[in-house]
Image (cartoon, rainbow, N blue to C red; front, side):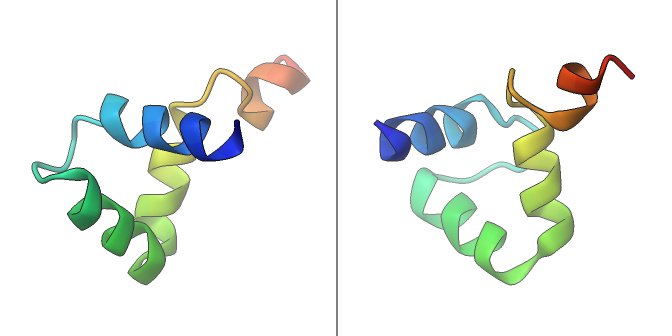
Length: 51
């Protein structure tokens, strides 16, 4: 279930052109890109905290 959620986040991320494998590698190499992908999550901390 967690893997499917991660896959959906990568599919929805549109700022970087590339396949899922390439996006996965970018998230491993760049914390900035990882934060950008996670920010697209409906469960991001900004939305939970109400900010």
